[in-house]
Image (cartoon, rainbow, N blue to C red; front, side, top):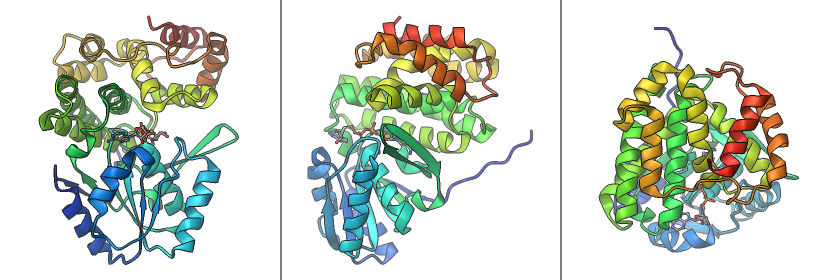
Length: 348
Ligand code: NAD
């Protein structure tokens, strides 16, 4: 066994129902006196509740998915205008992403309070979009200093979005098994993430306001993000990045649709990953485990239903082949990827 593994420096507080108190402790630990709270309009109610009592200098709700550069520019200007000394994000991956965009140029510390299962809060990856092209990078300054996980904040996430977001987290786990920098620590985290997500998500669908399912899913989402942050983007993430950028598809739903196709593609060529994933799913094979879970969750099925045009399949496949990790377990040929994208488009 021989590997190099970076553990990212970040405090995690997992405390359902106590986000307000836990967040106050983190802001106090930073010595912050002028906080900028970032939360989108549908996250605002939660944000107002959990940030009550903080020394807030500015509340910013101008959040857009994939962080367009103009949106980042306005948030950075607001941070300067209000002379803020810390950022608190309350919301999904788009909101966390905007806080990261501000931290990238200002070095301001972030305390993140996630309200979806996207996992951006546990990575040092930032993303910005300009002229429909999304650029991503890694920078230690954008890693939130602390994360406050309060599963009760996800009660308001509608069931359909909870499923898509949870499968986005599951995709981090699966892809971490064969991503370029994968190591045994990532694989252990990913396997436990799969176990938590396949346990939690059916409970969320059955009872969206039940704490047990929400906690399991949020815990799994955190593990998935830590594994992904270390392992990097495998084939699945490359496919989704290409599709999302080319056709402006919704992030979590795209991951949910594409995952079974990439798993079926790679699994026969990655027997160790297949065995570990099957065990984590508690199923005869990983592919069957994921299919059974998707059935129970009534997961989104096709790229067609997400709005991707049929004539986009060939261009998308070519872009995926160009972006695919060279060490993917299975050779990434144009024919095979065209078939994969076509199957995902049709929802086969
Ligand atoms: P999102 O943040 O866009 O949220 C989806 C919708 O749900 C939004 O309208 C949001 O306001 C709403 N919402 C969020 N929490 C809610 C709640 N608790 N109740 C009701 N509504 C709620 O979507 P997402 O899937 O969380 O994040 C996607 C973005 O995150 C993408 O841009 C993606 O690239 C990025 N991302 C980045 C990383 C990273 O490591 N940098 C990792 C994962 C995702």
